[in-house]
Length: 367
Figure (tube, helix red, strand yellow):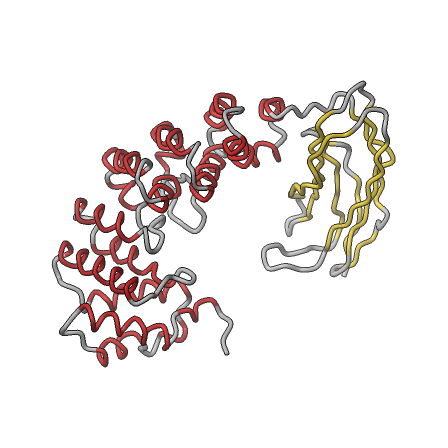
């Protein structure tokens, strides 16, 4: 049995979907549908390609007029629900893909379809070409969606407008000027749904990479309004915290003035690929009161060209008592992973206390 994610598009999936197509489209030709889906190239298609391929094949069977096709997609979704069929992963995202492919010149019908479809399968990718083409009108629509009764529509208002949504087309205008997103996020900051608040936090985290002052301003304005909003702000500021942004550290009460680092040493100066780096250090709060500590370490990986690239890892975030020594041991795996290639040679590690980085210690990585 295949364990490839792309195989969510399986024969059994299309068999189930064909039954709903036949119920919705009286003239549906199942044999032709299967022939077009399972063409000679299908087995080699990757997940996104199979998604696009399904939308393209569906276009052969839906009405030529996009407005009529959009109404048929709504009916398909209603019939899927009536049959007790729910999305298990992302297999029905070919519906929003269809809207983006064939409805981009029909704004009104597309908006109606996106609002309906996103309540069944997320339209966060499909909405982005519309923001690019109809930015002002589209952002007004998303502001309206941010007060919708359905949480999935409210989430779309934020998720679809993320300037740097992973695996999606970027939104250069919003990367440059995020102010049009502001009213949407203002509406969602106290949302009753955690998933919606998490999307708003991720949107702000995207914004922080290009416009940190926008996020810092809202963090100062929102902090203290509720436990849930405070958690949203903390998640939104995670990149700025990793960067040691002094304004953000101050907002959350992280001051390293009285925290002393000592006895920092690497106990495995030679690390074999597949094994672990080990290092130890001690901390002392020399102040007279308990203080907050955000404790991280920076790993400077050697790249192919010999340069070093830092990745920050969080150890903990906690209060530390005055006049108490904390002895800490840490390990970092050097097993190969798909997202990072490991190179032999000199690497470095540092300790980061409330954004303040220590000296770096070297260690060697070998095969």
